[in-house]
Length: 471
Image 1 (cartoon, rainbow, N blue to C red):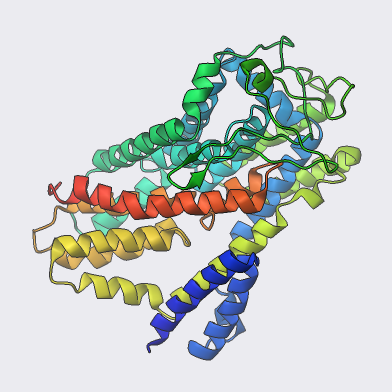
Image 2 (cartoon, helix red, strand yellow):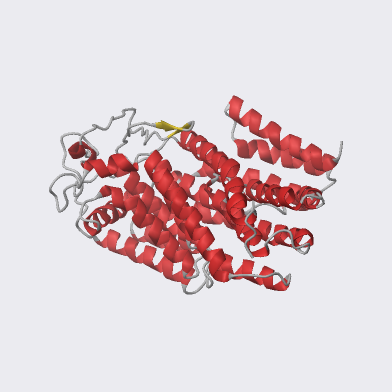
């Protein structure tokens, strides 16, 4: 049995054990990386740790730390109230606002994970308050980021168009952009319908400015949403646990709009007032956006620095923030990506790609490359996968039987639309940013949804973009 095949089988075993025994998959993946790396690939410790995602580790810790402080001092409550005012109380519009916001950020040049890191914590705090499925809100944020991700001035668009030019392939920047925008917009519409969006429309508007619940705060109480199930994906809302008690949301529009105070019988905090701590936190969030977008600073390091400054100024608000960093998620993501790094070091990914590109049927090779891009990108860098797969497609594109523009667009969409996976950077940020949820349950929801996207989207984009022979 070849080393490459052994490494793939070990990955399957890791998934099976983590699913059936409820063991943290990241811990299992670290052990697998050590075993396969040392015994099969003959890698030393440096080779095994070469794939450790140090930058993602810092982003996950920094962003969840900063937004834990924002939740503690009521800043996220204030932002939720401001968002409700912006859409005149229509809760159903908020997922689309978040979709458009992340799309605009990536379209003007933000790295996709940076845009998700900025928007996801706010969006998911809103989801908790108004009993919206966190799966709906999280996927809208990620698909929004990918919708704008291939504009001609975006990071992804610039990289892919550069690869196309270097390989001397026919290209179309606008076609690439519109392909990604259309696919993610369609998926977002389907997700909105299936995961409770229509029920939000049926609720109408909620009251603002203290009339109803939009101005009432819940800075820590647990909430529980209604549950639906579609295609095997549970869209259960939020299951919280505060002091050993739980509350079930009522089904009327008024009940959905009203957030309970942290202690029954006491008024909730005023979410409409800007305290000095909230003002400073909002300033820190704006500084994070400016630092990432305008000065290209690292999102994780910037977030940690801002969180430390806030902690020093208001230690009473941030005393528990470090404990609210999503440490189990950090372990899970870093472990899995370290193992994927071992696969890359030992050549497993290249081995699989070259095996597919050698198939004598161009259309079959094209769809298999789309699936390889989707599967690997669900665990690894989307840009890295596109950089590897587009050159692999050159030999059969040169035969003229496959349109280069359609093939490149299909590969790009397949490799990025799957970033909703909890093992990808964007999916991990969504998982880590969700407050007051059963993280294990939410992780499984994201994993099932990501699996459905991996199974369906590559075939659809192949059928629409490659088979007709675009370009």
